[in-house]
Length: 67
Image (cartoon, rainbow, N blue to C red; front, side, top):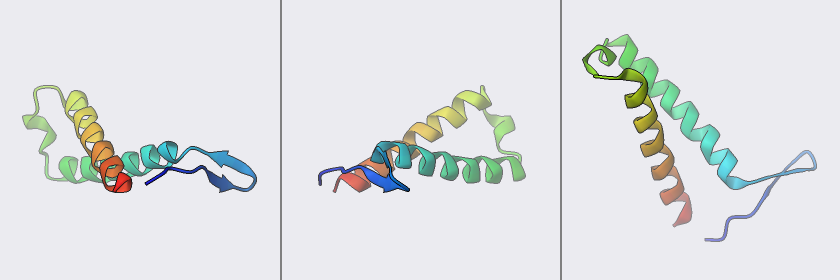
């Protein structure tokens, strides 16, 4: 698949930026769920874990969009 720019009110936006925002929203939901069940206290470094989860989610979104 070829990624093309998205026209948003006359401003062209790279498709990667849309994927970044989508991954950020999914990560926020996952972090909220983990905080609700107090799972982040088991992590050695919670911020590093959240960043790693963000990168995994972003990679999955890019991989699915590239198909």
